[in-house]
Amino acid sequence: MTERDNVTFSEKYKHEIADILSRYPVKRSALIPLLYVAQRDQGYVTESTMQEIAHLLKLTPPQVYETVTFYTMFNLKPVGKFHIQVCKSLMCALVGSDTVVEWIKAKLGISSGESTSDGLFSLSLVECLAACGTGPMMQINDDYYEQLTEDKLDRILADLRSTGTSPLKSGPFMWPEPVAVNGES
Amino acid sequence: MPKHELILLKNMMQPGYTGSLKDYEKTGGYQALRNTLGKIAPPDVTAMVRNSGLRGRGGAGFPTGVKWGFLPKDYQGPRYLCCNADESEPGTFKDRQLMERDPHQVLEGIVLACYAIGAETAYIYIRGEMVLGSKILEQAIGEARAAGYIGKNILGTGINVDVWVHRGAGAYICGEETALLESLEGKRGLPRIKPPFPATHGLYNKPTVVNNVETLANLPHIINRGADWFAAIGSPPKSTGTRVFCVSGHVKRPGNYEVPMGVTVRELVYEHAGGMRSDKPIKAFIPGGASAPFLTPTHLDVKLDFEHVAAAGSMLGSGGVTVMEEGTSMVWAALRLMEFFYHESCGKCTPCREGSSWLVQTLRRILAKRGRMEDLETLSDLCKNIAGRTVCAFGDAEVAPIQSTLHHWRQEYVDLINEAEAANLIRLEPVGRP
Image (cartoon, rainbow over all chains, first blue to last red; front, side, top):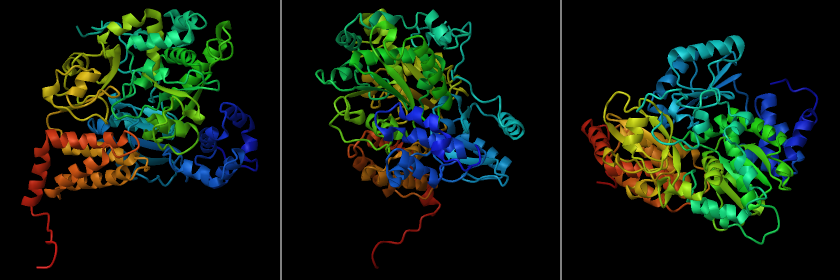
């Protein structure tokens, strides 16, 4: 995330934008990919960037806005540096996601939809993230954290505070992990 | 060793398998591509897939070869393949594993499908949250492009297939194929009215096939080992091959288990997933993701294939098997799923948009012990007026948890309402003037 400087979005990401546009025969298809670039740049999608993207794709600003507002992953206002999203769907709830939410609320002193006063953490409750076998789980920014326990949660939050990342994030997913000899007969 | 032969998970079950191009090639990867492109005529590939009996693994279970056959034969313009990797059905987490652990298996399937249908461009529509998955796929595409398996003039055959990863942005409905196409066109993900079907009017109004990740991953194996081999696996003639079942909920070892179609839920839960976590009996399970109606322990010996699960009153859907132990409140479970559907309703059709909110409010009231007997009538009535009255199958899906729990566990609803009435929590004034 960088501060917005005087360079416009289209100048700053000229090559990336050209690369994205080259993938689609119709310009509008590049809308969601470009919105991701904008969000990566500033942490959320600003009105001026939406106007710029509309101009780039030869759309009207409302056409961009109607798309942005349909999808939950675009933030239209700033969120914390670490955006915690806890899955609350049935499969995670069966294995304790409500408890995880209570832990996070108590530890950070925020409710769903709020950010800590230092701007470090935001909490959202979200629907299924396709990690039902390894719940309870949460996503923080781009990373998944699965099979959460209170101890694991403490370590993740401490890691994020001190280094900005945590080794407890999920790698390429496979569960159960392969074993040399399978115990079942 | 696993009891059944693994097909899709075989490579990744080998300890140390990284999913790199090198690893994949060592297991015979891209052999199907070498043996097919320019050597087997595209209609013959389609015939092979049709004869294998392969059916879509995303939820609807439509025969893949038949779907391909719907593309217009004489159309000269561009055609598209979309790989549906928008895995969002609660209870389902197989595509994530297939993409992140063995991406080339999926890519080989994509190129084979493109060859069969005559598409030169494929988009992998992956759900936005799976950032790692999209990076792994992009890296794999880079490797495959450098090795000549993807791009222009593949392996010198003159065939071109370009594959691009396109991330969604957090909308369950985009797993519905026409909503996926709308989303890929940069619009709101609202399902289209069908017909026309994507086979003739798909992406950019061009002939398009949308196939699930797991469906495509099966293709190299069908080509390598033949349609007859595949057609003999599982529960022929209508449910052939294996399924990667995703087991979640109150079991000891949740996770992805690949078994031939037709194994029983009992085998899946007790042999593969290690049984129930606290050895309590099973109270309920969902056999095919959140959209599939709940079943009861009397259905434990139902074979997990398309026909038997449908005959039992549910659907095999996406293969997400969620198991709940004795003591789980079914009203609560129905509410949790209903909250999901309420959140994910795209808003296009009135019955679904308004009905989902009404259903959630009614269930919340019952669960908070503020319900009344006529709420049960309201629930049934709403469900009847949503199912079949929407543009896409979402309407049928969202009423499944309520209709099935009301059917099997009506007493739980009644008990909660009785408690409410006993506690005198409801003070309803009679309608009209005395």
